[in-house]
Amino acid sequence: MKKLSVIVPCFNEEESIPYFYEEIKKVTNSMNVKLELIFVDDGSRDKTLEVVKKLTEDKVVKYISFSRNFGKEAAMYAGLNMCTGDYVTIMDADLQHPPELLPEMLRIIEEENYDCVATKSINKKGYSFFRKIFTRCFYKIIEKMSNTKMVPGANDYRLMTRQMVNSIISVKEYNRYSKGIFSFVGYKTKWIEFEVQERKAGTTKWNFWKLFSYALDGIVGFSTAPLTLSAIIGLFFCIVSFIMIIVIIIKTLIFGDPTSGWPSLVCIIFFVSGVQLFCIGVIGEYLAKIYLEVKGRPIYIVKESNVDKK
Ligand code: UDP
Ligand code: MG
Image 1 (cartoon, helix red, strand yellow):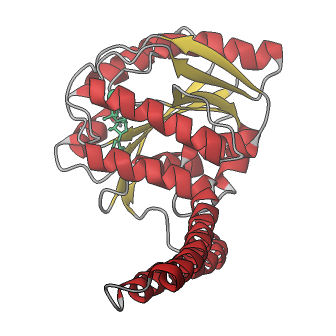
Image 2: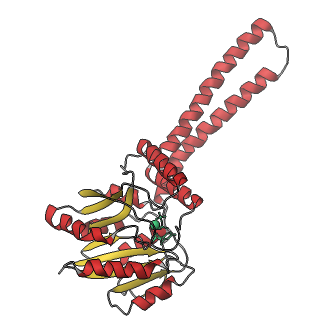
Image 3: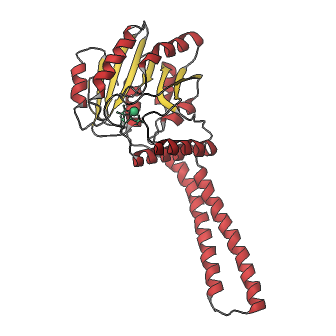
């Protein structure tokens, strides 16, 4: 019998976990798989860890607890790193990712010969108006800037084969952006759609700034276009200042210089700021290359766990 690992990143999810456990057990009991349920406690400040520890009476439940909040990306990576299943899935603890899809996802991988079944939400129920707009803008921008394709509405909820998971954990960069990494590693992926439900319990763990910096991680991690853009802007300023210098010289020669000092000052300011931006852009090009290499910090730190592997 094949083993299915379910990875659940949890940050202050004491209210949701019991519901989640009940649902996932119900669904997987009807499937022909051996279950491994890994809760990754991402430095929760509530009773999440206690709730999870209580569940470990059921031998399929494993937990990993971080020394602090490292973010959902780190939690997913830890789970992928520690899991042992032949098939692996990542799910939110709040039941916004319906477990009922799992049997169908498994069937697609086993029968239709896919490496991965990914999900895409067709609505954004339970998310604020502002967040919907923000998300849409982000996908527009990233589509223009990055060579790695990212699907709008994509979730982290997906079922993957062991081979694909091994490829993902071999991508060890520190500033992780999973939607980009999933796409980067490739493999044959089938997309299925579902309707997002309201959160079962608790509240969303993402505020505006957390989401904003996550979006920046996505852009910086998978595109160097901003650097090129700054170099182009710098160059543009250089050209503008050059034209202005010529215009001002001719104007001064023909009409004289009523406010003395003003034209030269403007020329200098424009020219110098243009050159500065250009140089920063060029240095940035190099910095980006180094930056991508030097990510040597650990992605997460485990404080306690009942997973004995690795
Ligand atoms: N999460 C996490 N660490 C964080 C933020 C969130 O592990 O720093 C988990 C959270 O517990 C949940 C999942 O990531 O299981 C998705 O979070 P949430 O439901 O708050 O996000 P939303 O549905 O609002 O996008
Ligand atoms: Mg949620």
